Length: 232
Image (cartoon, rainbow, N blue to C red; front, side, top):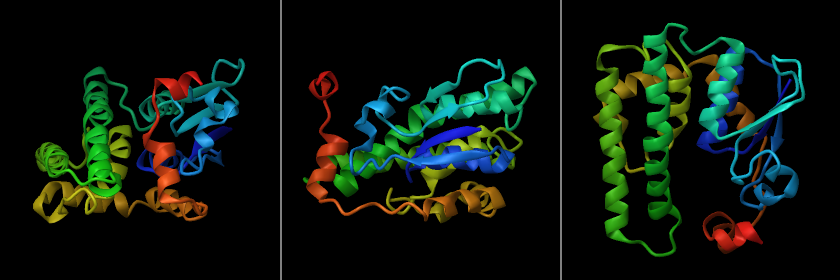
């Protein structure tokens, strides 16, 4: 029912985690971002920002034409509302979940992404940039740790907020973070890691192997985009 345009990134894992959790049938369509698949015209029709993930729902609830959705937070919200799962119905509980979903989208994801870029991918190691994003990632971990000090999951019950956040904590070592420094976050992380749906979602990633491509070519595809490349 759901076509998932996917690659093995934290944002890609969010969608397979959700679908595995709720048991909705789906098909994975690989978009090898290291090889430039995200710039193909057929993908840009459903994901105009040339980023994964994106989905096409062939059986929308209104019975109309297929619906395409891009941006991982929008996809999680769309799927949660469609299935009625992993999002609370009561307004106050729902608001708690949505706040933490957007916290990930606007904070943890972008900051950890810049952390990865400057510490792992940048051809020039800039100490200020590395320290800036490692420290900000650590601050966000501490915010999450404090939130989890008196509840099992971010919104109380397991929800799309937890699913959005978890894949960005998986590469904690690359982000210069130690989970043992965050007691409540570590407990939460291990609980989600052990969920059967999480295990199945990450097993899906093992089937996708990045084809041989030079580091320089990959950098150009991933990091050297501009207004000109969009207009071209």
